[in-house]
Image (cartoon, rainbow, N blue to C red; front, side):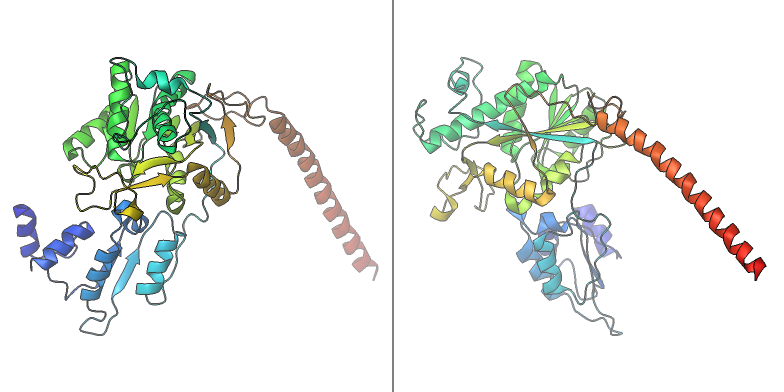
Length: 407
């Protein structure tokens, strides 16, 4: 911090920091906002929603910056977001910006044809293997502990029991997906940092080399872990949405979504699966979706979850909520305008009639599919039509020239 303050005190033109840090510096009198001419928010969608919501801090900072400079120039506000159509971003623009100009470099969200996406439903009433898996000596699956004070009664339909069953099965189904597709490189998205840690504790002892990437790991460890993954010394990168922002790893063949993002963050689904299918290489995104509501941590406390065990619902002053993934899946499908294919517990992906049999991670070939053959046939027909059109145009020009000569 001392080195940073020395640079600030010596005078700087651009100051880059998190909303919380700049607010602290302003409150301590270390940074003066009276001469600010540009106010820039990067990754605005992540700043304005979810558990990292900084809306109030942004409001405080904006209110302290003069709206006009000494020569009358207006404060220039620039907002960058991967999800420009996010309602929170649009609301911010309407509230703070003066006739904002929208520059959309992407358009509405869509999924590339090189990405195959499937959903596997997790149903603890149908698949009761979780009861055995939960009590295996020395191999039990560690969950997030939200039901530690609940009576879990296997064989009943109590919401807490089904929720715990979902958590156990999701870890097991990640393993099934890895083995079914012989994954040698995959990004696994978990909802929270705790979920990431638990997934690492589940996979590593079973012989699956993995690393974590989230905010509770030190910068050095995050850099080291990412390097291991890029070099394929670690086959599985377990991360949160926030940690994956700006992640650039080419040639990823697989993504597993352990939990879907909630409806208000559905654009994150597109970010996640967009990690595969790049550079014309085929990719597969598998989403594990709970067939019943799952109780999860949603910390509103000051510690943001550190040493917090308040498992009451938010509406009761606690730090928990019920996740309805069936509803979130519907929101995602409506957002993308598609129905995502379902797969069974064996994770077998149906062969696409256009792409044929696919090797995920390999270049797209389009060989053997009936639609591809039809496209080749149409290409020939279109070529013939083009030749006919040119002949007709020449005939017309000759006829026109002849008629003018006769006159």
